Image 1 (cartoon, rainbow, N blue to C red):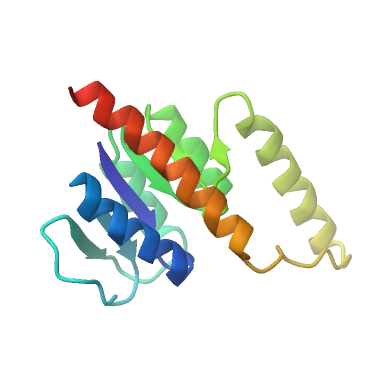
Image 2: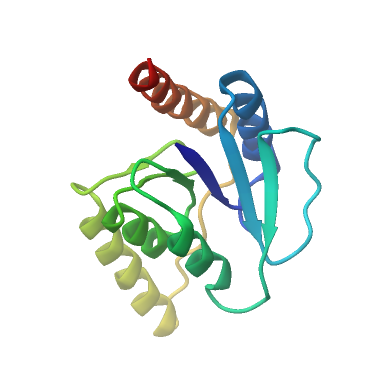
Amino acid sequence: MKIWVDADACPAVIKEVLYRAAERCQVAVTLVANQPLRIPKSAFINTLQVMKGFDVADNEIVARVVAGDLVITSDIPLAADVLQRGGRALSPRGDAFTADNIRARLTMRDFMDTLRASGIESGGPAALNQADRQAFANALDKLLAQYQKSRN
């Protein structure tokens, strides 16, 4: 398993959780972004810088992900593409995107886009809080434990 991070929008505190997990579990983490990123020196952590442009980083992740990989993203269409390729997707808030919930999430996203396009202000997501960070860390630990168990 490899972990791919949609890094342009990933909060720094979530990246820190991923860095620690990469070292602890010796799993590869690749941050994909359209700008240079600072990462700790590690044999398990690297970056992939892509050209600027709409969905360039997302398309690069989809092109590289294989069945069993994990993608960290809040981008619902990217999560849907990852699921179609046999990967797993987890939001920075610890919400797992699954075959059971992705269609409803895409529908709600499209509905909210329509509302915003018609001039209705919907606001954005709430700021990431400590409970969200803990939920992400717990969900990630659960997935990594499943991965470690399958390797043995």
